[in-house]
Length: 516
Image 1 (cartoon, rainbow, N blue to C red):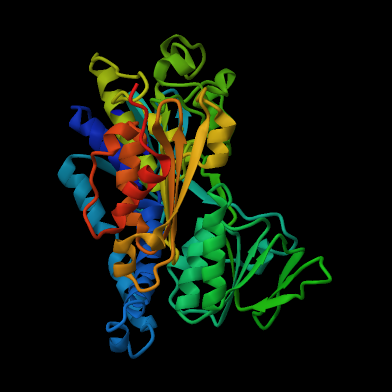
Image 2: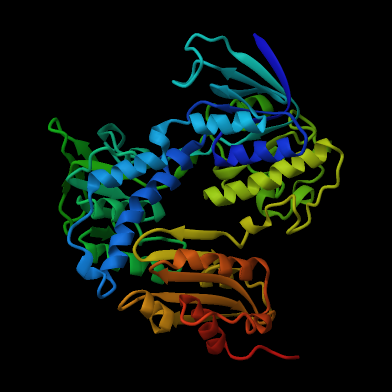
């Protein structure tokens, strides 16, 4: 069995793993990335990139139809074949050669195959586990790390325990975003961001869509966001069933999928395909975690520097920053002694978003290099080696029509935390009252909500609903992360006439901040 030695091993070459490798390489360390599928990962080929490529043509068409004068130029419907071709271009026809070239140019080694932790700082790679492997009968190799092993394996779709569903060959987000032919009828199970976005896509592409959600839509966000998306989906022709779950699913010999319900008020639904979008599960079942005292199939709990906590410290992920959260990892007994194992991205369950995983990756890569080189570790809250924003400053966009953009806490979450002695104040404003919005689209409809810490007079969270609000989110993120005082925001003058003028309207609704 061949053995290779590196300073750092990264298991998983998605955007998160690539970012870790890039940062440790920039820190002067040698690094190898192990990948069993496509370099670039889920986001590049089956999630963020293809889904947004599919959503954009419909959004552009909707925008043109919402402006008098431009609407007269719209004489047809979407060209479905052209939409799918454009999607294929963005995913490189599922060819990762350009990504592989980037690794090589950056000086990052790549081993194709399934990586499995086989001991302390040791990973065994079965090179025959992937269609992209060098050879199906290639001998396994052992890779050893001098400093760190980083798990960046992401997640798999979670299939709910509905009788017959697994046997009905359901779609997951992979099949939906890589579709080559649009089904005539599609059922989507799940009312989260993936379910709502895919219902939007396939309705725009001409499918009859039924969206089924056990609760409401976009749970965990401000309630008005889910209401707005539901109204828009229904207006587009989507059948939205909420507060109900399938009691059984069966695919017949003719390929038709029947979805049954234990309800006298809801008839069975027949579709050609069923898409499951009900959550994710960590891709750790075949990772060899048992060899280092961790449970296969579990999420990996980390401190704010992304270092995996030993099992006895199961709650450290919410404890605070850096080494202070997990205790002195270098002093731990057992196979994790020395704090050599890290987990970044979805697999640590902190914030299942690509941009947040890349943020974690930058912190982890830099802190690994600092520790390896004997440098100073900046692990206080908001330090360069921690992912503090994961706790209460996560930006999120749902690319439906209307778009949903949020950062920080919702009103319910802020009230539950009760961090401010002065309490919180919720300010709502109708985006349709902003001149820039009505110029942007005729009859613009939208809403913005700000959650304000009354004692400190800073913004804890912002949620926006409306066409094209995604591009307004970074300003809100800066306000939340920077804890910009309202008295200073009064001097951030929005240009007229832009949708950003809502900032002035929110401040006017709040009133002049304290001057004491």
